[in-house]
Image (cartoon, rainbow, N blue to C red; front, side):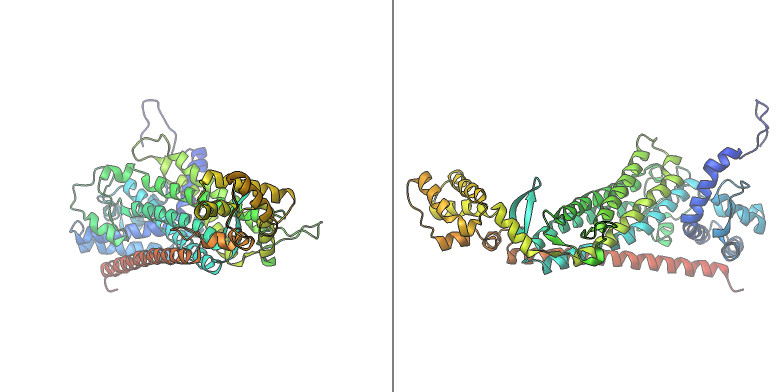
Amino acid sequence: MTAGPFNDTSVFPDPVYKETVLRPLFDGAKDHHVDGFRLIDRAHLVMLHETGILTIEQARPIAQALEAIDREIDVSTLTYTGEVEDFFFLIEKQLRTRLGPDLAGRLHTARSRNDIDHTLFKLGLKHRIDPLLERLTRLAETLASVAERESNTLIVAYTHGQPAQPTVFGHYLCAVLETLLRDIARLESARDIVDRCPMGAAAITTSGFPIDREMMARLLGFSRPLQNSYGCIASIDYITSTYSAIELIFLHLGRFIQDLQFWTSFEVGQIYVPNAFVQISSIMPQKRNPVPIEHMRHLASQTVGRAQAMLTIMHNTPFTDMNDSEGESQGFGYGAFESGGRVLDLLAALVPALRINPDRVRQNIRRSCITVTELADSLVRREGLSFREAHEIAAEVSRAVVAIGGDIAADGYEAFQEAFERCTKRKTAIDKALFADIVSPETFVAVRDRFGGPAPATLSRAIAGYNQEISGIRSRMQETQRRTDAALQDLKTRFTALLGAR
């Protein structure tokens, strides 16, 4: 490069720029995108030949040089020297050394680092989204299985941090599962956006050469090309949709994890964590610390933070190809997949090991009078009272029982009779045995057999529906994997044909 009007004699790259920007970018590409570069080079060469843009006499030596570079250069051992700007130019330099500038330069026909980069980043995201979807699906299967196992296991459900109503553990887990399935759907939708190939957009406006964008997308394992070429290099919704979905997944799972922390506390104690997931204090031998739950909580929070940071990085950037969305940002975002994957693996191992402590649940139900809502409902159905009047009677009964530290089924009938007669000026038709049945947690659950409720038959139908939904997710994942494998094999076959007999 000649000196400009300021008699500029500086030489690229400036040493500080080299160390603060170029070296980290090179190392990031070396760590994350080598396979993507290889695929793009090979697919682009196949497309250039099969569309007639390159003859076999041009394409074959390029293919042979690409294969030799892969065979002879151990990328993991490379150290950035500043001789070339980035990993892309390293490969181009190797091609020029082996083929000469004219033939080597033909591989770059009808493409740009703009469409290459966004294709690389999409390949990198797909490579990470798919294992994350696998982990999420495995967790969904685990939740469904444990929900079925625990479909008759009573627990105390809390609102505002206080005992509210009895339900069963399976019903609670299905609420978590429903949210997870919606989160999986959001990530699947994001993956569909990622699965649209930018190759062929070139710098901004495609090319005057007769390229085949459909072929490029297919050979690289994408579902289809992304249509608008400006959008191929400018739109970053494939990033924001992915990390928005990840943020919500781990925000929601963090709430579940926080419940586990609360429910395992000594004061609540309705969940028992097995010894395999418990650490003891270094000084207090009586303590059982379910530390894995804490690790899941902070890892989930770290994942949310990383995903939020990716959205913040994209905020207020121009709608064009910009470094803000590229190499270093992509590498930073990959950390969300790593920490999130650890949460999912640990949660899928912990949930089946958890057990509900029935004695503590019974004790907490007794102390909190949380079955009294059904007393109010039964008075409306059996005695024809308004709900407000029935609610006042039930509230009076619960206050009387709590005051004596009693059990509503055993100790609440006399208080009920008095409250009923005072409010209605008549005697109740509900005898002591029926009263005890009405305020039992088993009855509370059994009568709530409406759609979405915890009653056995209703819950069983719900779990069957969730399993069917999970099966659909599995089928879609398998179909995507088949398509990807077929694309890789097709590219391998066509590239091998270019190499010719040697």
